[in-house]
Image (cartoon, rainbow, N blue to C red; front, side):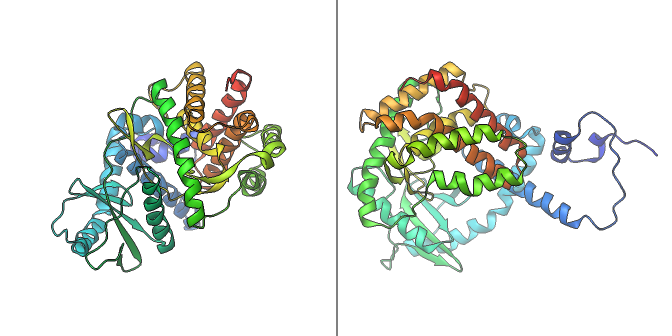
Amino acid sequence: MKYVNANEVLPEELLVMIQEHYDGGYLYIPKHNGRRATGQTAYKKELAKRDQRIFLMHLEGRTKGQLGNIFHLSKSSLRRIIAKEKAGYQNMKGIIEEILPVWGMEGGRVVQIYPSAWEIDGSYVIKRYEDRAQMERNGKMATLLSACGIPAAETVCAKNGESYAVHKDAYFLLSKKLRGSNLSDRKDLTVAYKMGSAIARLHGAFLQCEKEIQFWDNSLLKEMRGWVLETFDRNGWQILDREAYDKAVGALAAVHDELPKQLIHRDVHFGNFLFCEGELSGYIDFDLSQRNIRIFDVCYFLTGLLSEETDDAFTREEWLASVKAVIAGYESVNPLSAKEKAAVPCVMACIEMLCAAYFIRVKDTKRAADACQIRRMIQDCERDFVI
């Protein structure tokens, strides 16, 4: 039997996946007999999800070098993937151009900025929804937030007075584009302080939204004891020690009933907060908003800083300084309770375990392992938290 170098016959992304399981040896691949269609379909779905994530991160401004470090792909492979995904969205661009006359914007220049959002003439943003109720809720929330002095995108009504447009099974909401852009200097402690105060101001306005709109009630503790635990059980605790899980969830359970609950953003990161000349200029993307423990937003933002796989990754000391700055910024607007401050390490650990469980379910073993590694770092830093 003739040996063939896998580099010569396999796509680079497939070779990388194989190397995660078997690296640097001879591997026999049996002849195809038609019985592995299910496995091939699952592999194709996994690649499709990965390619969508790559395209989203590309739209958010990640360089091909950064994407290569995260997904272990060459620049040529990334160019191919991005070109393929971009072509797939051209049809949607045509649909948007078709419905723009509803707002009297015939011939507007359409530029995609997210997989479900497009910029129109540099002044407006149109977003696609599959769920009408979610679209209407987000539009009403933006109006309420603006009334509270929170910079949120203002909805633009169509010529017929409707607040949205419908095309087949999709709904489209047009809003004025908020000024500003995403921050890039993630290690600046002044920026960290401003992010903390921005989260606190948003939480204050959310209390008003709760009086006007019904939101999904969620519980981090119930998630940890429910589908997250079930996922790790099914996975055989391969990437997480059961004792570590029990410690973090037990610590959360001990204080959960005493932690303030309210409407939260649920997806706080630099991509969803806009700044102009160093000052906050806008909040975006309320698709995941829900009632939960309010400290979740702060902890999610801080753990997210550790998940960025860039050349300037946070050191332990830099991250602990950011934790202190973000908390100080939050408390400059809205004080945290002693129970909340004490719960920060266990909430962070639970968030990373929740992320790991999610990545296990979508079969992204690398990112699941990364989340568990961040969880370990949080545990190691626990004694050094100064909040």
